[in-house]
Amino acid sequence: MDELYAICQTFEIDDNDARSFVLKKAGGEDGEGVAWPIIISRKGNNYYGFENACPHQGLQLGAGGAEVMDDEGNFLVCRHHGAQFDIDSGKCFSGPCQGKELTPIAIVVDDGDVCITGVELAEEDGLDLPDSDMPEVVITGD
Image 1 (cartoon, rainbow, N blue to C red):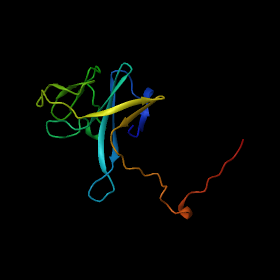
Image 2: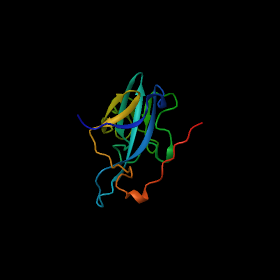
Image 3: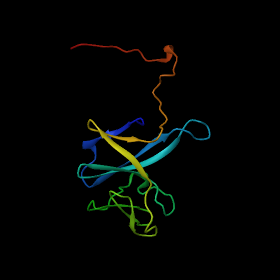
Image 4: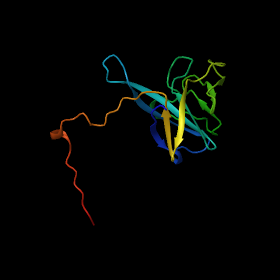
């Protein structure tokens, strides 16, 4: 089974809503990873993931923190050119890219976490730092 990467908890995305995230995908020219904007939407108890890139021109649906849902929570919207996408399939049904679809991402719900799988993310966990660079851990009691 592919590795799971927890993105958020299930309660952080309301029903008929979506959230955008920018992750760091492994690879890139310098090996440091590349920015990877994604969207996770929810319909009932089902979660759907898509790359946050409109098939019309590759722009993010809601760049700069703009909402990616219509006002009623019925579909995803590209705020640049008005393309509208099904919340669960990512298929464009209105706008300049009608008939195309958002690139899907595999989503797994695991113990209350919404996770992605099938990709390799760049991890920056500090485990490669020398011991002298690690912060001291202090445990205190009440």
